[in-house]
Length: 281
Image (tube, rainbow, N blue to C red; front, side, top):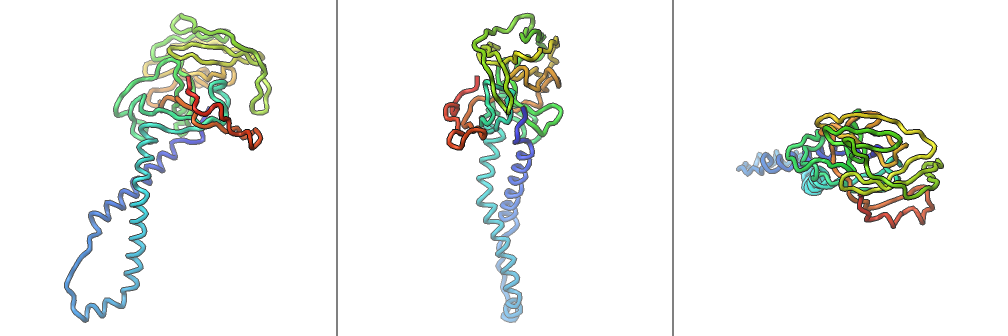
């Protein structure tokens, strides 16, 4: 599952902050009014170019006024988005039934440490991802794209996935069947089994596709990396296929659905009011 919002926006936000800040610094340091004594003849000669100088001065004043207006707004957005909370939109069904297509979520970026924007370099450690948490990260094979999955394996863990069951360090993950139904999503109809699963401190729901075979594997998570899986187990592009998530790619923990919009519904039913405010287990 990838997001339409990626690091390009962070880069342009940082660029806008630097440009507006530079304009304000230039205005404060270098653009000082100069008062000098001039003769009458100099005043008459200077009056001929008054309109041209006035036009240039007017243009620079407008630029400075815009910088003064936008700098504090850009700064606030930059700080909040880079270090505290960032919004994302869910574009696919790989995290069903936890997250739906069209969900707008909030991601806690402070939880996993303060990182330098754009380069995602951790400067102040706070805590590390735990098993069961829903994590946003930069896709290891394309750092411009953000993915969201559930953390299953921590550094050093042995993960076994067989017959659609997870074993962590030799212990089976607790899960139990809760429902069977037909799921219709993105013009597909799937017969699924919904399970309640417990990983770490998280109790959540997952989906297994009745008509799809499982992929068995046994791996050990390298130090400094994480093993992640989507809750829609048979329809998720995750660590089973492309490998591990390096710690440097971690973005934050998803914790809240703040809005939900389903464009495939009738106009009057597109807002999914029941999902607004849901916490992400």
